Image (cartoon, rainbow, N blue to C red):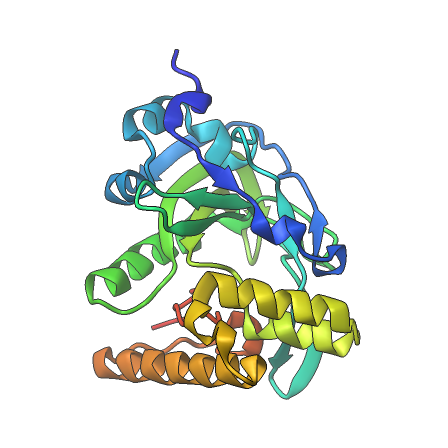
Length: 267
């Protein structure tokens, strides 16, 4: 059997070099019976990954039972304005494996959604159900096909375990790919805890990932804010053109890269 190390993983993990207050090192929680449900082969090719290897040996990675070589799994901290209230949050059911460097040199976050409890889970079980994860894959790929900036879905894996919602449902893990998972709420979190060193480092990191031309501005923070506002406004305008409704457009669900992220009660 081919090994997952042969898939073509090329991880760099620049986020883990930021101040530790912005994340918690956290491994995915293994599941009973991982099984690959869907593999997005075109996206795998864009990332420089071998789809044949992923079909044969990828289920354990996509379900969280095996960490691919070079990955440094973390849960990210962030805050959010939710329904009129400000709350410190974080990845309560997601694990960022790392940043895959594609053959063309572009950098892509690879995250497992539904990978188990983390420091930020609060009362949640850290898991996800198969139906919503398949829905996210379908809708996000549909948005991508429409030319709307979006996170994408590399795979869905079944866990062989039930998750309890209104009723027991089959569990699953989604592998989400993003330009980054830096959110508006990531900056809010660093500001709220008054960690100015972390805030400055996060700004440098965001400029390197998304706004390199603005790194030389006299007021870099203002330049990055302006760029982020422009991206978000353009994104929402594109949503409106196709009748897309996000449903939970809080600051924890807005990526500074200007991609649609967190497909929950969307329509």
